[in-house]
Image 1 (cartoon, rainbow, N blue to C red):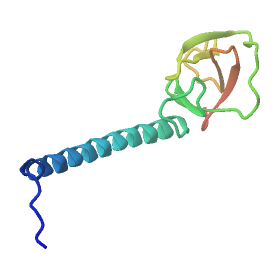
Image 2: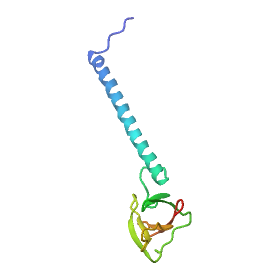
Image 3: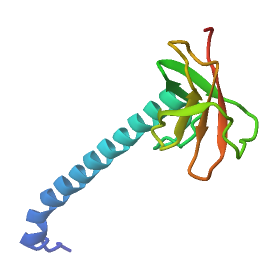
Image 4: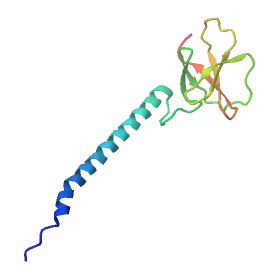
Length: 126
């Protein structure tokens, strides 16, 4: 039994559907790659597998040096003798000892929006 040919509109729209599907796949692949690049950059910089940096990342660079966050629980009081020295990418306030006179502090602190104060120690030697 012979089959009837498909309607002419369906034959013409098939290549368009294929092109749109291919375009959707390409756009999706580019979006996934962009997100992957962002995640890898955050991990390389802050030691976290995330799309955005947290206020208190595991690792940060301040005053041209690298610091690692302590595993101790954060405090709620800011130690005396500290002054703000910038912000982390996630918005935490970096606090350093007053009057460094060109020296690198061994310890710095980061205060988050919830008022917790995290301790960071210098990586490497002074």
